Amino acid sequence: MSVSLSDASIYRFLWVYPALQESVERMKPVGKHSLGASGEISDFQEILRYLDELILYDNMWDDGNSLGPKEVHNYLTRVMYNRRNKFNPLWNSLVLGGVKNGQKYLGMVSMIGVHFEDNHVATGFGNHLARPILRDEWHENLSFEDGVKLLEKCMRVLLYRDRSAVNKLQIAKITEEGVTISQPYALKTFWNFAAFQNPTVGAEGSWKVTITGDSLSLPPSPTMGDSSSTVIDYGNRLDI
Amino acid sequence: MFRNQYDTDVTTWSPQGRLFQVEYAMEAVKQGSAAIGLRSKTHVVLASVNKAQSELSSHQKKIFKVDHHIGVAIAGLTADGRVLSRYMRSECINYSYTYESPLPVGRLVVQLADKAQVCTQRSWKRPYGVGLLVAGLDESGAHLYYNCPSGNYFEYQAFAIGSRSQAAKTYMERRFEGFGVGEEFHILDNETVQGLIDAFEIVGEETPAPEEAAPAADEPAAADQGAPADEGAAPMDI
Image 1 (tube, rainbow over the protein chains, first blue to last red):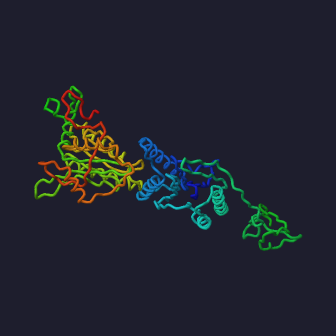
Image 2 (cartoon, chains in turn yellow, purple; image 1 turned 30 degrees about the vertical axis):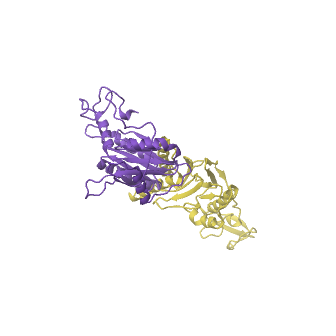
Image 3 (spheres, rainbow over the protein chains, first blue to last red; image 1 turned 60 degrees about the horizontal axis):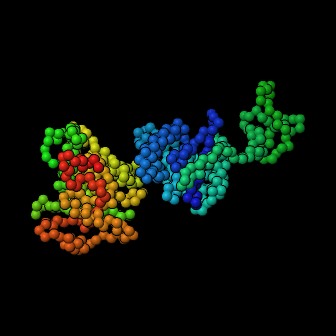
C-alpha cells in the first residue's frame, strides 16, 4: 500500500509475511524507484531480474536520458499483460513508486495487466480495507510523519482482519534523490478482549464448558467481560 | 574519385585503409538536393530543396515526421531514405508502446547508425545511399544529428548536406553564435519564405520549392564536403 505526499516524495508500506523465515522482503529498490509486490514471491524475484537488466541497459547508454517511474510502470504493464495473454501469468500485484523532475508517480499493475496511477494504491485486501480510509484522509499536503501515521492506521486494520498477516512492516521513502527502505518493525496490537479469551467456550461441539457452583450447567451465552465463572477443559476425558 | 582495383566490394579494404564503396555511397549523398538543419536551445528546424522529376510531376518529399518529437530530412537515394524513415517510425512507436514515453533522439540515431554500419560489413549488402539529418527533442533539450552511410553520426548545431550545401554551411558558420539566444520561435508564412528566397536568388539558377528558408552553419567536423584526394584521409574517418 502506498501514499504520495506533498514534498515531491512517496512513502510506501510493506506488509511482510514471514511464514517460513524471519522476514520476506516484498519491497525492493529498482534504480531510483521502488517496487513492492504481493503474491508469488518467486515471480516477484523474477520480475526484479527483468528490471535489473532494464535499468542496467538504460544506465549503459550513459546519455543524460533515463527511464522514469512512468516508463518502468508501463514496461511492467506490458510484461504482465503479455504473460496473461499466454495463460502463464506472473502471479503478483505490483506497486511502483518514484519521483522524476519533481513529478511524483505511483502506479499499480495486477497479474492480469490491469494498471492505473493514483495518489494512493493498495494490493489485495488493502483495496477493500485500506483505500476507503485513504480516500477520506489523504490530502495533497501530507507530511512524512502524517503519511506514516495514516499508513500505519490502515495497516493495523489489515493486520486485525487478515488471518495470515503478521505485524511486521517496512516503509520506503522515495524522493528525487532515491529510495531508502526502513528495517522491518512491528506495530502494537491489542488482543486482550474478553471474547478472545477462551474463544471456544460454549461453542457447539467444543470440549470447553463453564461451571458455576458444584453443578454442571449449560454455559451462558458468551458475553464480553464475563469473568465470574470458572472454565474447566474436559479435553481428553472420555467418561463425560 | 577515380576507379581502382579496391572498389568493387564493400568488404575490400584499400591499402590506405579505405572502403571505397562506402565513400561512393557518401558521394551519392552529395549528389542529392540539399537538406539543411539548425537548432536552438528549444527548437530544431529542417529545410529541404524539393526537386520535381518533370514539369508534370509532384515535388519529391524529403522531410518526414518520425514521431511527435522527431523529424528527419534526407539527401541522396530517396528510396533508401524512405525505408530508413519507416524503420525510425517503427522504433519510435515500439518504444512509446512499451514505455509510454518518447524515444530519446540520441538513442534513435545510434540504432540508425548501427543499422547503417551492418551494411558496410556484409558482402551481400550495400551501404545506404542516403544522408539523414535527424532533428528531435528529448529530456536534455533540442538536438540535430547527421547520420551518414558509413555508420557514423555526429551532433551539430547546424548543418547542410547535398549539392551546393557548402554555401549554406559557410553562411551558417558566420552566424551561428547568434542562434537561439532568447529568440522566440515563429513559423514563417509562405509570403515571407518566398520573399527570403527571392532575396537570395542567384541569376541563372533554377528556383526549386523549399519548405522554409533556413540558413545554417556547422562545426568543423563535416564528414563529407570537399572530395579528398586519393592519398588524403577518408571522409568518414574524421
